[in-house]
Image 1: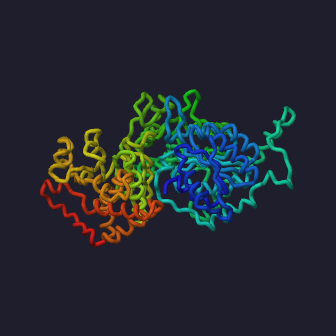
Image 2 (image 1 turned 90 degrees about the vertical axis):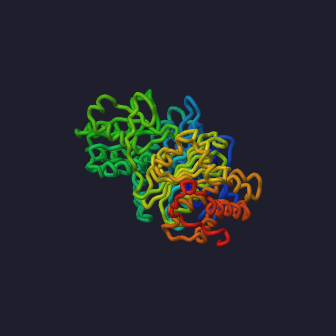
Image 3 (image 1 turned 45 degrees about the horizontal axis):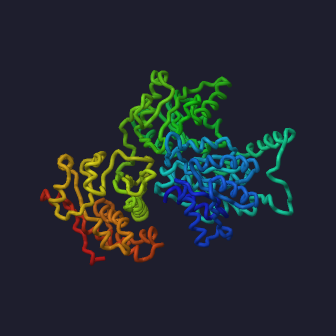
Length: 638
């Protein structure tokens, strides 16, 4: 499941209500919660779930304030400008000691232009609001930190944000182990026993009063007593979570830093990618390490300073940019922590900073490797204290070639059109590969805010080990194309390994005609690199089997599932015959499309079966070669 589904799967069991206003990329979180309300679900203590959609994010935060004042366990889902619009209310919620939990699909703020994709601008804009702030590296952490934040918020009467990178985590499907019901009952506890009801008639009080010069400061400084408990409570909750689940958490997550000369510090998905980069560089004999800041609030200054103090150089990579400040936010916090150490006479490393991934600009493993090269060279560090990654700019570092995929990984990069159903099919394939073959998967969609009717790119990686690259892939085994015209709109064969496969949707049926429709330069590259070209009229299949005309366009995308299962090696490796394979496909189709009725499920299955049986190996036919592909079983065999 993706990060949105992961947190919703936890919140619908432990929360009592949601007050929210939809904003991309957090909308799917709220939609999943509202669907549970529509289904009449209750939480683990039998309380019917409720959902209130307001006219703005500001109003949704105010409603959450009221819900929490009345002793309710409340959640909110927001992002970007929506989070900033709430800021007035955020200070009120923390000042009244209300233990709400708000989920953030971290998003770039509108600057010279609107952007709906990943950035930490919104998080940094509210970091001074008195809330705890936990940042997940992947979907698994998003689910786990949801429970941890709830536990600590209520113990310390301090609200919490749980953040994950917009689209890079909120919309990226990965393997997730959800906490069991009994575990959540034990760890989080009954809200009636853990949350104050400030509106209880038996305990009357005034709230939201005016305080003048004689009283306001005393109340404000008095709140430090709550924050004094925060660090210890968070550490204890994380240790208990590890005992219950085996999954380790801390305010920071250090990887191979004990003897490292150079260390990269970051938050979110970049920190996950950095782990794999460090392992590759360590294999080459370099003493490097990386560190993820999980708790930006309360900031783990002492832990972070101790973790990096023995390095010679540290680079902080941030998904934001504040050019009017001396440094970006996380860099400032780290330098302050190190200054405390230096004041005590300790030697501290040199710290530099980089901005990357703004608006979901791709942060490749090679970009992080380039940062390690930068801080390994004292002269380069003296010449510049700030760099940018992933764009052409005088301050940019040049990406270093590096492949961090697990050994034996199989990847796909697809090109389609928004609305064709390919992104959903990509998730279907990832789910199938994970559930049926027990493999690690990651399905990531890349599209703009205009999505429908415009080009989309989607990525899928399948491996035996965890996948830590969050973003675009520079090495793939399979490239499906929505039309032969894609060859003319860019380099469709870029990053495809020699001997890899290409699939193209076409209305042509004769293999020689299909081959002739491919541009000459692409044909020469296909032959020169021993690539295999496959083709099928998926549009005709969708029209033939769609139960309703409005589904014909979307169903052409699901044909890719049949093509993928036919071409990829996974079914053959598992010794899975076609009937068992299609039975497994049907089970997943029920999960994805079951709410639309059995006719839609059956129609999608028919398209997948027909694509599996009908896809044509154009290169084999035109070359007259026998490539020893197993002959597909006829439809009647199912």
